[in-house]
Every structure is written in structure tokens, then in C-alpha cells.
Image 1 (spheres, rainbow, N blue to C red):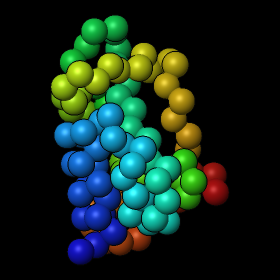
Image 2: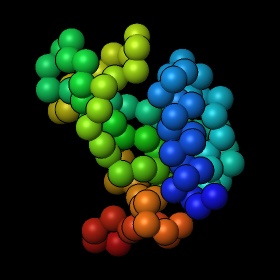
Image 3: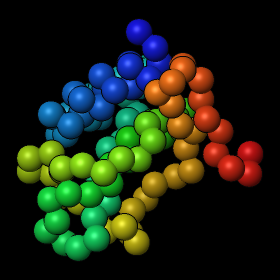
Length: 101
């Protein structure tokens, strides 16, 4: 499996069990430091932009639009605590560095 596939597997587990995201190991550094945030435009929205990253190694998946997990509350975009993390991209196991680094 590629790095991206490992990350997608972790995202799938986090999406289906968001209450357990802190027990899922980071596919890159193997710590339990993953974060899943959905940003929304308005309170109560059921669709938003996901951000999924490890706050230890600062690697994660590219943001994507989708349905929020059942029982999961979105965070207003302006208040979202999303760092500038390195993206694990789907076409290889390479990491895409953020602009300016």
C-alpha cells in the first residue's frame, strides 16, 4: 500500500468512528495524534470541508468536500484550528510541502 492508501484507510476509520480518532495511529509517524475537523459555512450544515492531519508530524490528507460523519459537529471555517500541514498526495507516496517552505 502507498502512503496515501494508508492515510485513506485511517481517514475511513476516523470518519466511521470520529469519537475514536485519537486512538488511531498516524500512518506516517505511528503516534496517536490525528485530528479530524470539518469546516462548515453555517452552524448545522451537514456538508463541509474535511481536514485530517497528524499534529505531531504535520502530515495529512488534502482537504475535501463531503458529508459530515453521523453525530459530528462542524466547525465554522473562520474558527477552524487547521495548521499548515504537509499533504500526502494520491499519485505517489511523496509529501507535498506547503508553499513558502
